[in-house]
Length: 282
Image (tube, rainbow, N blue to C red; front, side, top):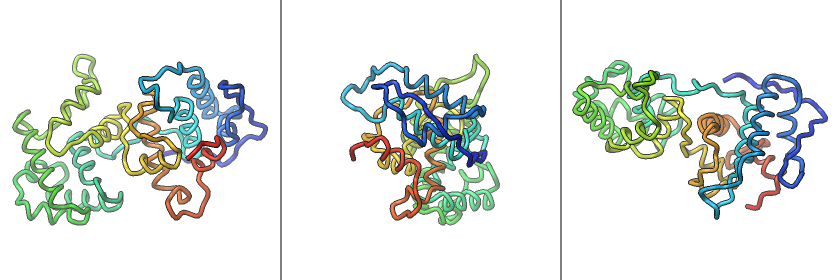
């Protein structure tokens, strides 16, 4: 992810059209200036401010479309604008799905070690070898990632079910880009959820991080930072579709790298500062 510039223009002034008030100084600084990034963020924020207030969740206030856009602006200024390829290193859909399963209920480093051990033991993407492996061998290979017995069962059951249904150890048809072959997000989600052990969060992670679709998975970092921002309940679909992939990637990256937003962190956090500036009730 590109490194964001540390320089911020002075004298930033950007109108928030809800009541004619000014947006927070941090957001204003991020959108001020003549750089390509500032212009892009400024245009996106203007679109959000003019969005319709109508919502399928009329009794739920948080987050608004503008708030989602403002947080996106702040995180882009801090971490850079994520590309559509800001995702898993694995271009293989089944590999991405297995990586997501390995990441459940553990840290990033632990899940990466488990994936590396899995590849070293059976060969990268040698799904037939994993399917034929003894449960004990698979458990040992991914033990460092935690919940090894449960994850091993899920992975072997998943791989076998895919082979039985499609005749191969592959889900690459879900990544098809040709107009006559491209699946909708709903079709991909239905396929993924049809396999035992794959839930909505895992499916959303594959959609967003592996396939680059506009899905918003509420993982550990997103949930924790949503509480920091006061964005609860987390199920409220107030994040504009065009922001879901990028905002998910940015919140995940920020949660991993920002010391200030952690429970016992001592540094300042741009999201905590943003919430203070907006005077949001806890």
